[in-house]
Length: 260
Image (cartoon, rainbow, N blue to C red; front, side):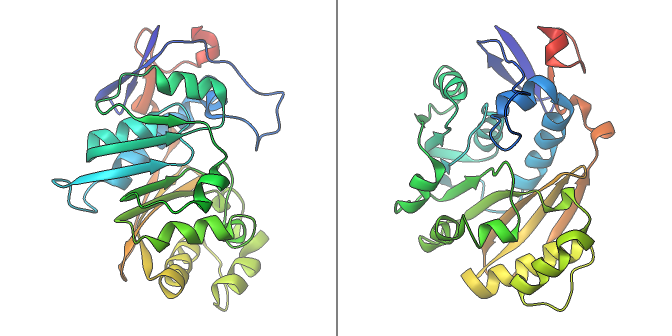
């Protein structure tokens, strides 16, 4: 068994050997690949998620949680360390991740499922907190192939919705015009304009807005949305500044491939 330290505060045990999925299409890789090959990104994600979840909703109340794409459980851990949880459903397609999640000793034992996220999104889900960790996403995808499921998340008026967006991987000049057309604005020339336009569009469409946006280096941004119109806090998390966000206790800041 190997133990990872998350955000220099909490431990997450791994009871199996993680390995690279470099032979698979990048959009088909599970989070096992990133824990194995890109621990620096996992570390950056950990700190970004910790900041994203804090001081948004009343942390003294109890909530039900639905994670549609739970990965190796880092987000699960951070959710449970931030909020009081009365029940927690974690879903993941990858069989290795499912086994890991079932055998991890979380503070609140989750119900672990192995369903297609699109199927779960089509079901009436009344969880208070909802999390959708897309491997790849932008306003284009949430209004096209994920349109029905993404819209479904807002119907039960949850207290918090969190999702991942990877549009910032590319310069805005590449798809900015397409984003702007969908969001109903004249132009989008920066990631900040993208986030603000997304939040405005979200409010017009679902009466929610993005209250926090955490940038994971240059390849992802995590959105937290709550009901109503709110100003968006934005914060950047750089790879070089966040290496201690996720590491294995025996040896700090080396790749898992070397560690195993």
